[in-house]
Length: 299
Image (cartoon, rainbow, N blue to C red; front, side):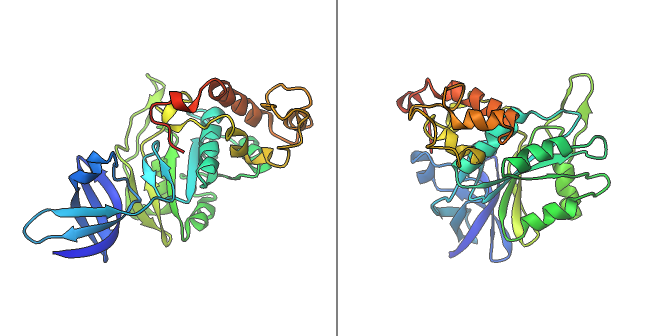
């Protein structure tokens, strides 16, 4: 038996594929993890035992620096939030929910709008740049600005998340054609795309790793597993941070409160209106929920 340090590349049907010492090993997780309620995730740093006459086993999982349930991936330091500029149209609430979760977990979000060969994404890109978030518009068809995304991947463990049909797999293929990820077409009849990515999987790209993950069509703002509590929510909107502590009342929720510096900044055009609308939608849910009421809340 030989023990090796590695990283989980993907997990399918109870089997985990671990890259270690330049090889990929198929492993099973010890039963101890299930008893402790720990599910191995793509991105986990692990120690495995390699056995010639028995199954390879994941022996231990290192403490995670970050964790997302949707997309299910660990230890990423950059979250690329991919949205198409059209077909389907972007949902700014979902994008803002993800950027907030990223900041809440200490991960840098980067917003990418695809299909700019079909329609300009400048309006959306400007919203996020104004908020202090890196944002790009790209075309996987023409290759425009794809090299800018490639530069952002260097030396990082990154996750790519995007709703079905936004061109996430096409973008990853444009970044590295050797990936040859399956892509899907938008269903005109149903107005939505087929699910083409069934599991989270890490790929070595640009001296780092990227995770192709299932679309977040099921990523609901009511999802209690990823709810940000009301006291933490304002800090998860990076453009709010310069104004926090300056409101007239210490109980200010920064929604429609009198004397609120954030509301004032929105009115003055210093904070994008759409971002504040997303914040209010999230706060409306968070303000009435106590932490003890959550079944599986995790910070």
